[in-house]
Picture 1 (cartoon, helix red, strand yellow):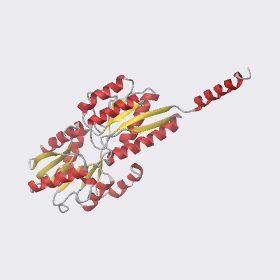
Picture 2 (cartoon, one colour):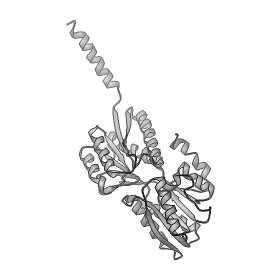
Picture 3 (cartoon, helix red, strand yellow):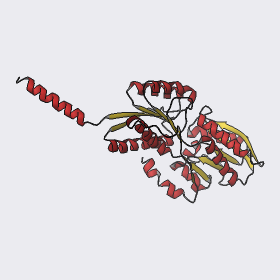
Picture 4 (cartoon, one colour):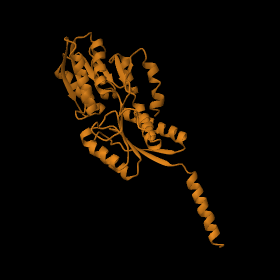
Length: 317
């Protein structure tokens, strides 16, 4: 009996500690690439949401960041599989190539792991929600702003990133739909490239050398504006409207090279999808609709300084 009592006390103490310890929930976050600041902001948003919801629910919510260094849909698919094996209870992913990720998403869901997509969807998959801009409307808004600053006439080019990304394909469709409404505007071509700032800037320079009559650019992603001096023309000689409004890009508003940026709420990509996952996992609640739309925020010289202050929270480092 003397030996049993201490063991019983230890067992009861262990049980009490286990009962007092908060439940740990690990959520996987798989963005397109490590180096793109929009995904760094999404990561900050996810971590912030995890902290807030941990406090709200008395949980220990952790974010497991499994993003390839550069865009690679196969590595994203492998990351999803690894997260399921590691015990993640939910996954949020931005799809570089929906075709290559649909099976991996479906296998995760079949194994009881809910998946949310953000920024770039896999619409044929079993994901329960997608959060981001309406990509067709994004393309339309980009072209509408460009047509306005070009007074409805000129030769334009479209910078379009990865040709396999479904979100970018829809944005190109939106650009074309609006451009068709302006008889004075001609689209020279849609130009694809590897989604790094250096490759994007090189592509622009190559295109401009071959097509010096281009007077406008629609950037359906802001890749080149993450570098300095990416636009070689004098401010105002070639008009440019770009999606995204990150700190490095705001310099092009201030210099006059870009009259309008359309800011995606990339911090919310991480923050909101974590909220949606926890609502599903903990509260067993599905969102009212599969697609939750995030509005674009126009940034011009009039509001650039006020908008810049947001980044102190969204990208503190």
